Image 1: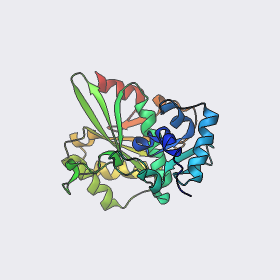
Image 2 (image 1 turned 45 degrees about the vertical axis):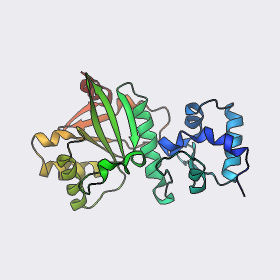
Image 3 (image 1 turned 180 degrees about the horizontal axis):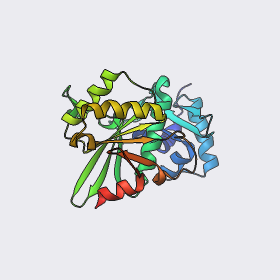
Image 4 (image 1 turned 180 degrees about the vertical axis):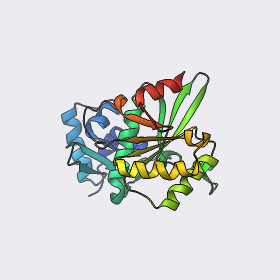
Length: 245
């Protein structure tokens, strides 16, 4: 089915996907410019899905419907941008990275959030020694910005891979902190143990750990999540507020 000419106007409603890759319908509707009523918007998106511009996924736990651009959809955007396509095999991982990053961006402490696809092709990453996180956040601290690398770890990697990535983050001065985000406490404990074995001193302070066993829960109070920093638990809100000072 060819893209109908009138569909090009509808593409404007999908612009937020260039930044966030995959979004639930309500978030996409809220973030878009000059969007119609929600029901009309959902109807238009069904047309775009039928035209194979977007694909959808309904999460079994929160029942939200998520949409993301297909290759055909991505190519409709003439302006130069990094490709947003999602491999169906990594859909759940990428969906969570987007959802968590958008939620963090909505917290008052985070100035900006960027996903991997928006910066991985930039020159600063041409050096093979550079490390590319799933996302990165910026927090304003007086007259400067603190940068936080974000890594979502749904499954446990091999010990050597965990060690190598931790070393890359220590070598790379681009990031002030590395925030590892887990859905399983056992995986979090393993990462903490491995990283602490390498960096037991000041360097260990660079690493933050969060365990969230229900990451797609609706109406979550993100501020109440606990960050483990230097083996102490502190509410996420309290930790970010301390960085602001």
